[in-house]
Image (tube, one colour):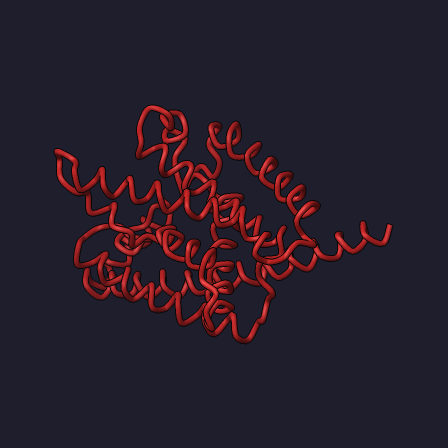
Length: 258
């Protein structure tokens, strides 16, 4: 189980450093501007992510080999297609809930990209990034979605409200898991690891459990476990965001006082 491939070390690591540096610079110049101004970098990237997904879907629908069911936007990271533009441009009465959910999702991706990026996209996708659109999409989609999390903190685009945020996050994630979990079984397609597990040791456990207690019950139990894991992980990611947000604000105040 390789967490970081050599290709990730060579590309993602410097990208993360660069994104954090850009976020720090943007904070320096924009933090005292209005929210509308501070949202502009976030909006630009949200549009970029949405556009390359639209291109991907068009290419899938027009593919000579037919539409690949794996391209249906039911993966965990597919949520960014909808939530990033929604956070970027929605200013209605539910904007705080939208921002809380999007921030938690972005924090989850940031953690995965720093801990286990090889689970998100492969080293082969990085190597072939500029030769194949699908590899380009999966690489840049996830990198720029990660950058959005950095921007949320750097530009103070969300003010945490633990009680309201957590209620919205839990309801949203549970609804997503029900939809993606059911569709994964119906279409026999591995959305968000709901059909099988991409982590080899855990996949071996899944297969062993199914062999012991039966295919149907074993698979249902597996879907429930993945759902619980998703809820816990996103909740922890939100707490990680709160801690990181607190640290950044403390450091900013320290520099301002000097």
